[in-house]
Image 1 (tube, rainbow, N blue to C red):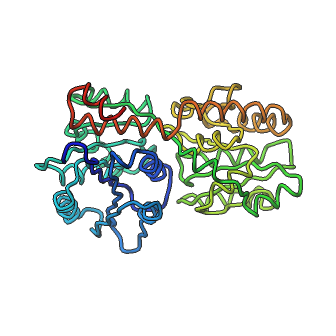
Image 2: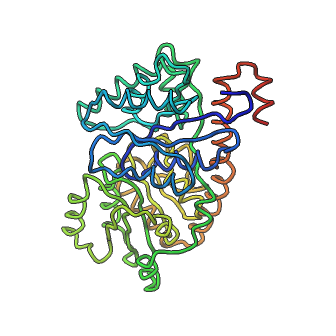
Length: 385
């Protein structure tokens, strides 16, 4: 890389749908200074049936993309494809974003001049043996990276316990693309129809998997004292059928609707009166930041990632993890008290705008990328500022 020319950063992300981590990558590249960082988005497509949504979205934003086809759970061809791309496209930094990308990316960059950075977005909970093995290997390889930048203080402290990693760990907290939030003005027709009938809308956006705690949300909703409410669940996942069966069993089909995965999730979010994240494990949840930035009152479980964002009765409400009765009571309070919803929504928006913008996150990554090339702090300040 010539002095003064943009650093070429290849992001290696997950190939599936756009969830929190993938939207995080898009927020980063869309807010970092393009005159200083030349971002490329790539994925390892391990099945011909996968459409890499992140590449499609990145292309629409004007970014270069690359798809490495390596079918199967473990394919050595991905290593050689990525290594060839690094060398032929003069990639300066490889930035990986999930356990498979971390392991394959590290092997691909070995012996080249390319620096390698990983951003852990969180660990799974109650996962199967195979996934636990992958994540264990992931932790073992982190010390071989040039830098590891977790998205939350809890992940940072956890990683600092790994021998040889403390001096390479850089805490860069999650951020949300505020331009994306503020540019969304339309409310989805489905939500608008509910609101026209005088109903308050409680909503969730995210994967339908066990660690997200959607079963707790449904139990809490079923036991609410107020019936003028509807629940919108946006997302897909392995628990979809199980959760739908519970709704039918409780006789809630007229008040609870599963909308599946939606690219227009922000149009739904705009119509929510209350956003709930009952998760059992998170980094710093992007969906909560988006809800707060959109001016929606939030209710979250008392897990570390959520507590990074929400202070009880100040900018949101917090309930004890897995306690459906406590969540139900909080929802009843918010439905009954419009002034409480308004106060929490105003304070929540103010807090996210001040502390968790993607612009702030992008500036910190810009400094990290440059620090991998310029050891003198004076040079870092000269280039970045």
